[in-house]
Image 1 (cartoon, helix red, strand yellow):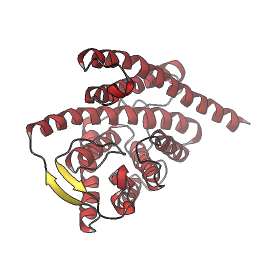
Image 2 (cartoon, one colour):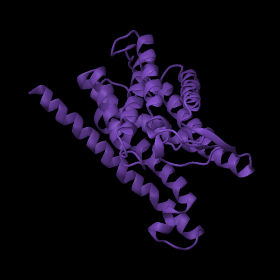
Image 3 (spheres, one colour):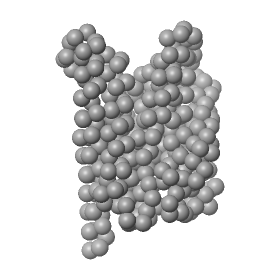
Image 4 (cartoon, one colour):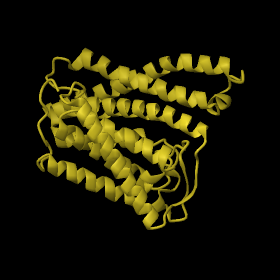
Length: 298
């Protein structure tokens, strides 16, 4: 009976947090629409907005703002005195961010090299123009926002509130399922099972990292550079979304190895690399679902 009651409370909190995030995102979109409409072609139709790069950047920022604002709002309203931490205020945060950033670069580089080795992708060109570097600088910041808002929401709040009632194993698995569902509407996500399987696996990797280190900053760094280097350096789609990149690729190999329209995250090679990394971090944390126990105040 108590388990059912607690499950209902946790599900209700997560649903409410998502509703808050959605509403706050809509509010944040108002100035984005206004600015793009006034400074763009003057066409206020949805098709015109969606074709404007400024709208794409603005909507990413608005979404990040909405989700990042929803988490402290929920925490202050319902969980501040519950005795668990979001993992934001972590000792050695910048060290963990750096470690995660290096790890993200290493892991996606392994995926890239393996794909080249099995000839599932090949390099067709290199972009060196000034416009590319301007795009890269912008996406470096945008992907930082994406990593912060997704980790704060999925690993900070969702994983935290589940962990408080049901323990770390349930928290990691359920938050990873939630993370996968959030990406289900990305381009190419439903083309075959691999994209969502790999997003779930990435959620496990981030969730285990959060448990082992006691905070959000290693998974934030890992998430940030994985996305940025994957898309803007190596030229893959990032969870189905095409971005400007230094390298130009084509994918002559089968979709199961190249990732198809979803990018590297839709390949079996990524499955193996992400799975191996998650296992390695789990073993370094002691080989238990808890890893290192999260200390209060971290």
